[in-house]
Image (cartoon, rainbow, N blue to C red; front, side):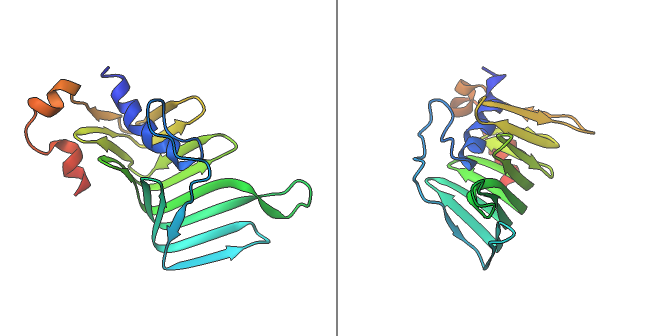
Length: 183
C-alpha cells in the first residue's frame, strides 16, 4: 500500500487535466462538462492557433480547479483545411501553478499537458499532497492512458512522506508536512 500512495496522489489530479476523467474508483468528469476560465485578459490568435489567458487565471471543470499566472491553449490544424480549429494539441500553465480537488493539491511553476504523447508534466519544484501525505521531486509525469506516474529527483532525490491509512486519522497529531507546505 505504501508504494501506491504517491501514485494515487498524483494520478487523481493529473488525469483530470485532460478529458480522460478520473483514475479508477474516482468520480468521472463527463466529456461534455464545460471548462470555465476566468482571467484578467484573454488573447486569441486564430491564424497561429493559440489562446492565451493571463492574470490570476482560474480554470474550473467539475470539482477540479487550476490556478496559474498564464494559461496557453494550443489548437491543432485541421487536416482537411490546414487552418487551426481542430482539437486541443497541448495546454501550458505557467507561474504559481496550483491544481486542487478537495484536500488534494499539486503546486509547481509549470504544468504542460501534451495530448499527442498523452502525458502531463509538472516542473519547477513540484509538490503533491493529499492530507498529510507528500511527494516532492524535480519533475512529475503522469500518463493517463497507462494510469502511471513517474516522479524524477533530478540533481536531488525524490522525497515522500506517507502516513499509513489507519494512522492518518487516529495516531498522527498536528498538520503534517503537506499542510505546512500549502501555507
